[in-house]
Image (cartoon, rainbow, N blue to C red):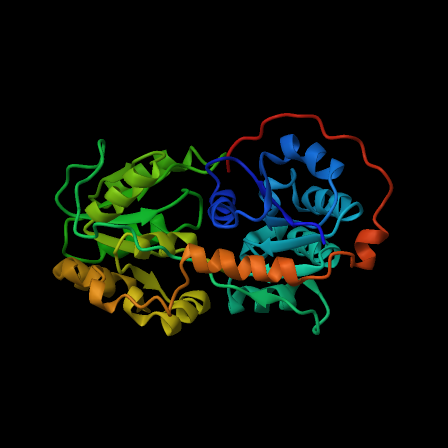
Amino acid sequence: MKVPTLAIVGPAQDGVRMHGSALADHSPQAERIEGEITDVLPVILAGDGPVHFHFTDRIFGRDAAAAAQTVERIAARRPVSVTLHDIPQPSDGHAFAARCAGYARVVAAARTVIVSSHVERSLLARHTGIPADTHIHVDPLPIDRAPSLGSTAAPPGFPASTTTVGLLGFIYPGKGHEHVLAALAAGPHRADVVALGRPSEGHQDLMADLERLARARGRSFHVTGFLSEDELTAAARAVTVPVVAPEHVSASGSVGRWIASGRRPVVVRHPFFEELHDRAPWALTLTDDLPAALNAALDNPSSTWIDEEDWDDSGVPSTVRAARIQWSRLSSAAPDSQPDAAKNAGGPQPRVSSGERASP
């Protein structure tokens, strides 16, 4: 059996690539390819033996159909396994049907399929039309506790206001910034909102809209821009109250990053967050009433910190453990079995030229 190759695909600052890269860091026995899909595709197609991807359509092609075609093209030449991210949901709007069709094609092309939550597996089965008996592994996203949980020094450029409510990760419509601003407007606290991260590609104009919305409600809205790992941890610890309030989610790296930083975020109720809460109730505060929950947290900011004695590694896997689980999945799969969809994929495709994609 050939050693599986871990193909870590996407822009360097993309969360899916960073997640795949972190797992690969703890899989020294694997071969490894890393870079933008346009750069690594020729190398992948020239190789043989099994290859694994962390897949989301936005980093594999211009749209879901093109992304699926890329995976099918690879699967026609070598066995493919995938960990799927950003599972299609009806809230995707006009792109929902196309994304469902694309993800169904990727599942058909892969010999091993992994998702990060039972909610994702349910969404995949419900919306993509894959056979009900398709076996899909559920391996939760890892969370590594950052060191020195007592440090709260803010990075340069962090807002100087004494009270802040923070959201973490890429900024895009539906991430929850408007929801949080509206919730704060209903309460007595004079907290400003800070976004730890930068806008997703194509959503830079959203910053001006959020700033206007904040001013109209007597608040300030701050954006830190891209933060390094250490800066992000420092900023996460400097926020008065961390919050996660997206309109839709299937598995969230943002909530994991808050937890890793020692914070217990206020989180709007959602099946994925309920699933995480069942495994690690000490790690987040679920709410059906965001204004009341933010007001309570601002009254008692200590409630948004995880007591180190409460941390339970059995509730969330470390990256080391998650890498070990992933490797077990990949190394135990039959190396010479490719699905019919892969074997029957279309003939040779035009060679993809080397280029550079913008970060999402």
